[in-house]
Amino acid sequence: MSTESDYKSNLLGHLISSSVLSFGSYTLKSGRESPYFFTTTLLHTAPLLHATASACASVLSAAPFAAAHPDGNGVKKPNFDILFGPAYKGIPLCTAVMNELGVRDAGRGDWSNVSYSFNRKEAKAHGEGGSIVGAPLRGKRVVIIDDVITAGTALREAVGIIEKEGGVVVGVLVLLDRQERVSETESKSAVGVAQSSLGGNVPVRAVLGLSDIIEKLGAEIGEENLKRLKEYRARYGAEE
Image 1 (cartoon, one colour):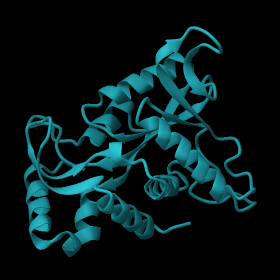
Image 2 (spheres, one colour):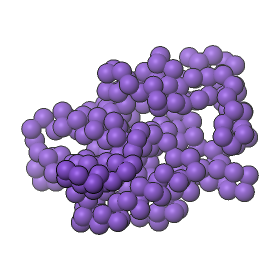
Image 3 (cartoon, one colour):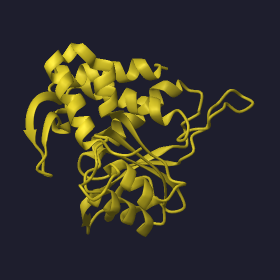
Image 4 (spheres, helix red, strand yellow):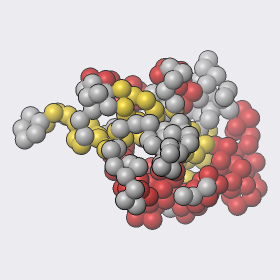
C-alpha cells in the first residue's frame, strides 16, 4: 500500500498533467478570485482514474474508515458496508474505488463484504425499479464518496436518500477540501460544516486539501503560483 506522501504526490502529479488541477485566475461561484481550479469532469482516462481510485482506497483502508489495528489474523476490517456514489460524479468514483479495493484485497477477503451503490436521478418504474443501483442500503453502514463539497446541498440530498432506504451514514470521503471559509459569516470550510451537520461521530475526510497542494508541489508550480496560493489561504483559510 502506498504511503500517505506517495499517494498524495502521485495523485497531484496526475491531476496537474491532465489539467484537472490548474493554476491561474478563476472566478468561483462565491465571487472569490481563486488562483487554482479543480474540475473533476476531466477524470476520464485510465491512468488518471486509477491514480484517483488508488488514493481514495488508501484513505478508506485506514482509520477511521477501517480498523486502526489488525485483528488476530492481521486483517484491518472496514468499518462500513457500502460505498455510495451520489449521481452523477460519485458514480464512477465509487465503482473505480471498489475495483481498487478488490485488487488490493488479493483474495484475503478483507473487503469481500463491502459493496457499492449509487442513486438514479429519477426512479425507474420498470424492470427492477427504484432509485438505487447496486447493493441494498437497508440496515447497512454507508460511506458517501464524491468529488467536492461546496454548499453541502448534494451531501444533504445523498444523506436523505440513504436514510430513506434504511441505511446509516457512517462517513464521507471527498477528493478535495479547499480548506477555505464557506462565507464571510461562516469560519468553517464546507467540509467542516458538513462534519458539524452530520455530528461529531461521523467522520468527513478529504483525499487532498489546499495545504497538500502548497506543501507537496511547492516550487514545482512556480514561485508566483505558490505565492498566490499562500496569499489566498491567508485571506480565506478556514478554521480547523
